[in-house]
Image (cartoon, rainbow, N blue to C red; front, side, top):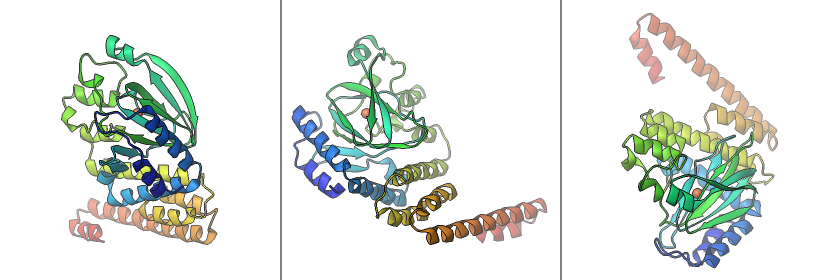
Length: 309
Ligand SMILES: [Fe+2]
């Protein structure tokens, strides 16, 4: 099943409206569709291509939902999880369907009543989910994913557009709940929080004052790295074409990874890319050395020329 077909079929399910939760069977129907779609490699590769398109547009496009359908009340997120990374426990109130896209994730759940009534986060379960496995939260629930592996993993999430945190914004803080968001609340920056989208550590850095351009660059390149690690596991004939597009978007580190990956499909292209990268790196090192030399001599005109070069 292709991504476009999946979306068309999801639109055919009545997923309610913000504040109006659909019957559980409808959420299960979506879960079943998602499992089917992930059983063939094409849907996942379509998602990777769509994500490259967002990276091309820049960090702002990337920070928005991966896909949004206001009319049919669903949004989609398509995150990658770096080794040993995850996100803090967070609340859902309507519905969310999640699936692992590649490798595996641990999913932790917590007792909702204890959080609401006692303001404590009490663990309930831990599930190990492998690529292609899906699950859902229907009405109130607290959970978080974590990648305990030494390699990248990925997931996809379809969620109701009416879902937003409540416990976080009322009463005493709950230790461990949405700790990225709580850090901002303590700083009085809560208006900056796009609650529906959840905060990544990178967005937190932005809010705390790290240079935006730098954070934007890191966000794009980390996402690209996740996409590359997903491609690394695919044997599809579509992979080389997608790698060509990814290479154009990559920083030096990600281009190195592209070269490793394309070598399995196209050794000649791998060699060409390797040479290009070496020339670019040498040129850059020489420019830096020259700029440093002239700076020491106080020759700012030459430095300006170098900057223009
Ligand atoms: Fe969630």
